[in-house]
Amino acid sequence: MVIRAIPAAVEKLSRNNGNSPQLAVNSAGDAVVVWRTFDEVAGIDQIQARTRSSTGVLGPILKLSDRKQTASDPEVAINTAGDAARTTEDAISPHVTLDDGGNVLAVWQGSNAQILARQGTLSGEFGRFEIVAQADPAFAPRFPGVGIDAAGNALIVWSRNQEDSSGAPAIEARGRSAAGDYSDIETLSTTRGGSPVVAVQPSGTAVVAWVRFNGTVQLIEARRRFGGTFEPVQVIS
Image (spheres, rainbow, N blue to C red):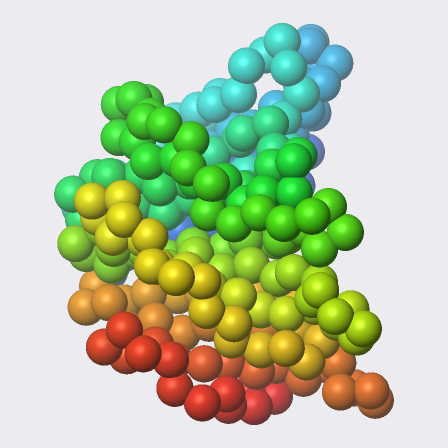
């Protein structure tokens, strides 16, 4: 796998084949890249990572996953101090984020029609499992995303099939305070929304975007959250 910053020269990050790369960059220009690679010795897929400083210095290749278990779908986040967190949980659609204090929040789709979250630290100490959303398996929440502000307040989003005759996917969201308190679930879109993503500024202002099929083409829609309140839907594409 290679990364290129035009017009600079191409830099080679991995020693062999790499795929499913994910990149996180902070405001200082420091970066962390994670990817999946096939370990020929172990005979399974593994997760590796490498840092790149704002001055272009590459760190050593780090092996993150257990060499006895296959791993996939890596995620990475970095804060303004240059601290990084990665997740390779045995789950579906894992995502990770961290605040400026180094507190980590990981979310993923569980096997019991749930969206789960867990808070931890960069040293690897994680707290209890938290149920963010759950439903009957036919209407299970899926494809979560998460963003966090500088103080550790997070916004978690996902899509879920509606429990009505339409069955169309809805986009839902729920806030989580730094203390671990959850707000009520809010529905952002009820018209065939899917694949939600979220970005949160250090101040707490957030934007949630998703894909919506209008019967003819796929559209990108978004809603901004300012002062704890979501503004009307905007068509981006």
